[in-house]
Image (cartoon, rainbow, N blue to C red; front, side):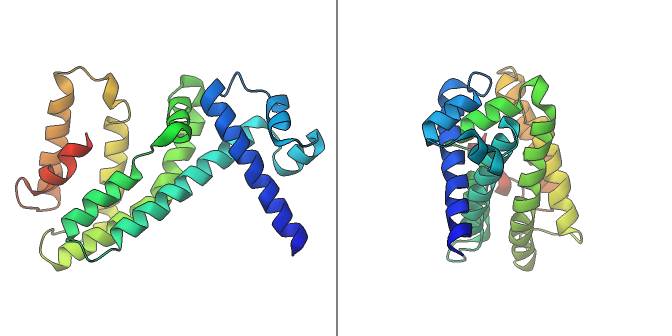
Length: 206
């Protein structure tokens, strides 16, 4: 048990060091030697845990997504708040913030990292969609929303949002508010929510 624990700790140390280096220098400018020096380990130890620099990045992505999911779950299942407030807090938690998360988002938007982008979105969907679905079901019970297909609704909405708003910052100042308004308007109609109810929740997120 001691060996397993030490191995897990070492793996976490590698990820933490690589995360800092990638965020400060960039993925391409960071070598495996840089990571070795930062952690103070031999090359064989590094390759025992990760076969490549890309595998290390996969590990960082997984860790960030897991942390995001924990925060989202804490917000979603805090029933001391109304459903719409829980939804707002959950979506705020899903926003990837911080230097490491910002680095990951910068990396996955590069054309050569299309696969990385796909993997990140898939991991987020796997972890986050069920959490948002539970909020939607609570809203259905309270007659805030109406749909016979909560899981499928969340899947479609998140897929659409990730596609349309993936490069939101690159949209023109004229097009951006129109895209956001159209998304919220159609989402309210899709979920049979009261007009304007989701605008108050989602508007500030954009």
